[in-house]
Amino acid sequence: MANTIQFKRRQAGNAGAPAALKSGEVAHNEVDDTLYIGKGDDGAGNATAILPLAGRGAFVDLTGAQSIAGAKTFAVVPKSSQDASASTDLVRKSQFDAGLAGKAASSHSHAIADVSGLQTALDGKAAASHSHAIADVTGLQTALNAKAALASPGLTGTPTAPTATGGTNTTQIATTAFVQAALTSFGAGDMAKATYDSNNNGKVDAAEAADSVPWTGVTGKPTSFTPATHSHAIAQVTGLQAALDAKAALASPTLSGTPTAPTPAAGTNTTQLATTAFVASAIGALVDAAPGALDTLNELAAALGDDPNFASTVTNGLAGKLAAASNLADLPNKTTARSNLGLGSLATQAANSVAITGGSITGITLDGGTF
Image (cartoon, rainbow, N blue to C red; front, side, top):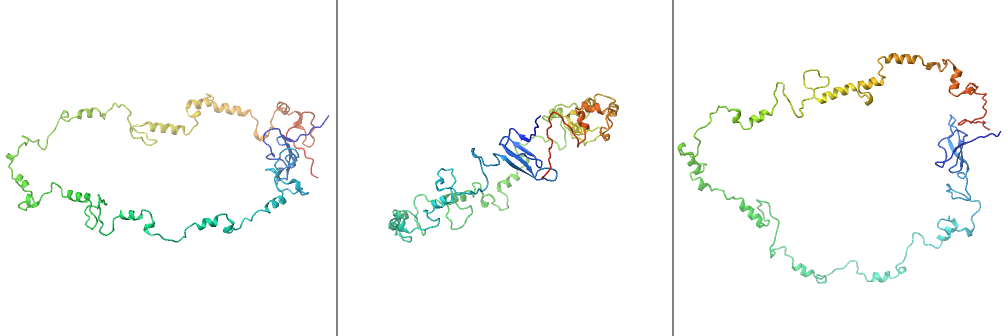
């Protein structure tokens, strides 16, 4: 009968090494056809590095496309006939040096004569420093003639200027708007004292005349006056009865709409009105963050199986369980228990003398020691 030993393997998925291996453990990745091995030991049997051991991922592939990292040194220098020609070919240093031999240095200079036409172009340019008369500038004299002189200018047309702030008293030009505003400030109703206060006593003459009018000379006055202290019926005050009808009585009021009141402090137990906020807070304190499936008495009862003797039921149920501290030593029939677990006779074999016939074992360690 043939013996079969299998390594850890990956049939599909990502290429590359396993995330972890035991020290000396071998794994084959069928995605990139590479064999990996765990190297080093962290003291707990785990590899400190995972290295490619064989396969396309560990050695140069002579036929397929492959990326090679790191500097490579060739024992034999490529022949001259192997100079690069395609855009993706490697270029040898000798070929690169030969290509640079006929090129100019990165830092160099040229005389003016070396640049075609440069001297001729420069000869046609004016000197950097020169001057012109007003007549040499087209239209300049005409433009100057249209400007006003700073000293005693003779302006024409409709000259304008910024309007000075009211009350300004300087040499600033006054606009028509400034003048009109100054005239308006006098006011059409201003009175000259000499005209309206002829006796110079501080009172308008017409007001003095009004002060001397007798009571009988006042027209349009009421025939009677309301006494200082008096009363009115509700009906005599417009809208008062309707306003009273819209108010609630102090004794046994019948409220409508959405009446509101101050929310009492939590735990208040008096005749003070309770608001919906007070009730919600009291219920919230009773539930005290219980999960939604256990925040009512009915849900709590259902969770206990509607069993009024729940404590006794649980105690009796626990009495028939094995003791955790006994570690299964209190099993009444160990042979039957092993059979029920599917362990068979293998569970009773010594660790240093295990006999396995047939079947398969996954995840075991075959350790042949070191050399």
